[in-house]
Length: 151
Image: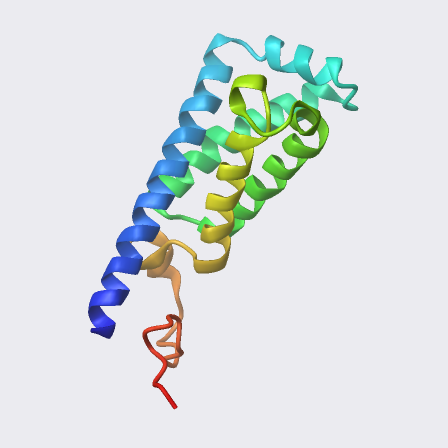
């Protein structure tokens, strides 16, 4: 049963990682190919310092970070940057609009941050390239509620 749960966890992490990576890659690529100007204008409107730098930083993070997430390379590090980016988006741009995405609210950014946080905590799983860079065999630890034995 433990092996089955581990496989299900790995599949869940794979789906989360690839979905988040493709969404970020698509958004960043769209911003890159259609021009960074509208993003800079939005950031300027909200009074962010250095809007050009933030716009390019977000675009590069989404394109390169999204690609790295798809392959499962540097997953916890990239995901931590995504969490930070989305927290900044929520705090500086979206908070005052409420929850719903239709009103330019925080809904979408919260989901992206939560999904990235899962990847920060659990990594890429055994399906990511990150697994090739692990050193030695780590001792078995309980990583699931199903691993613990009742008292």
